[in-house]
Length: 289
Ligand code: C2E
Ligand code: MG
Ligand code: MG
Ligand code: MG
Image (cartoon, rainbow, N blue to C red; front, side, top):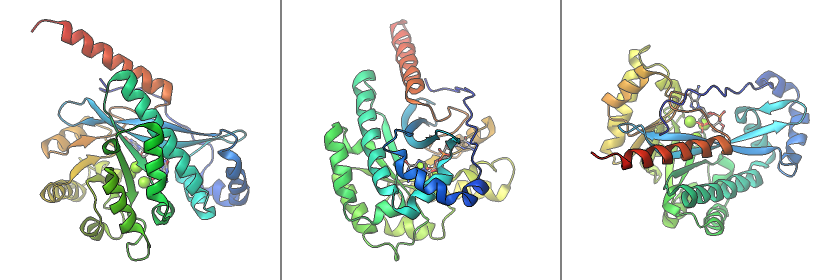
């Protein structure tokens, strides 16, 4: 199972946000070639059921391996890609690659894992987004209900033409919608009310303070309760400790994602995880009750 990997493949990003600010121009122009040069790749982080701690899904996360500077965090380069509009072709590549990967894993390991893909505000405003998603699903053969598109609250609903229409169209395709980093945007509740969201991802800044700040604990509890009353499910991000786990379990958070279980993994490591799980399950099934 995906239980407590504790693998220490911590990423050391060499490019700080300060460096990125100073060298923004150079990075931006370099980014233009990153896709064609094969410098981008995806890593996958498991999401587990809170009770079983068994893997139920994964989130695809983008990585940029700069030939000279080393790995650059998406927190640094995604905003640059948004400024230049490059996030649109990059985002298409992410969708295609992740859907293909998920479908391949489903066939190879017989597991129906949900796939979370992050969408940038810019992609959400593109009228062709539903077509792009539809194509990725068709090309890959992935069941649309397994694809969950993660949107952040950084954009105002009013200021985003096509946003609501796009999300409705994605829903009609069968895809799920998750509100990412819930609680950090300016309009969380408005989002929840107006957008067809199926899931809420509680932001890690709240989860981190479980056991530290009673106010943040109250926010996490209230978010879970509210989501359930609205018939939405909840995933907690950034689950790092046993204390986080027991709190989230006590308050019926549906799913968990974080270093306590597993870091984001390159394809080969993720496959090792799935193979191990398959092996373990095969063994336990063979043991008489
Ligand atoms: P996010 O979508 O909220 O993704 C979760 C982030 O939390 C990831 O950071 C993940 O590595 C990190 N994380 C997971 N578990 C833990 C934990 O236990 N502790 C801590 N401290 N962190 C944890 P990452 O991969 O650096 O990505 C940062 C952000 O970049 C993402 O936040 C997302 O907003 C954006 N991003 C990543 N991939 C893509 C993409 O393909 N497209 C777009 N548009 N944005 C992306
Ligand atoms: Mg996300
Ligand atoms: Mg998040
Ligand atoms: Mg985010």
